[in-house]
Length: 159
Image (spheres, rainbow, N blue to C red):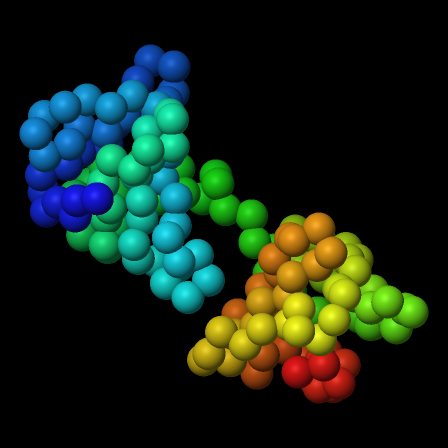
């Protein structure tokens, strides 16, 4: 894995709308895919750029250091891959014989999901929590302190 100087690489789109990387050696890599190496703890840093075959080509420590328009193209491609619903409100948590059902509002709307154990709720530091449901979907609470009083009270039983 290499970590090139940001000014030595360039992102573009081809005629089919695929992301293209021109690396520090001038080699053109078509249909590359960015992936966050630490999506919950370092969500704005350490981006792996992978080939169509999921082979890592290079790693970018800080995408903000890329010149425009490469930065925008990379961040847009990352945004299309992200799927971590942000919990905004906890309406209720219902106890089951083998876990709990959470009824919440996320940044994508109202939903419910099943959580097996209290260990499925992990602190990430700085007031952030991740909840992993039975299907391994991760839900993020980016700042427990910013939740409304009722949601915080419901959460206290499990965290």
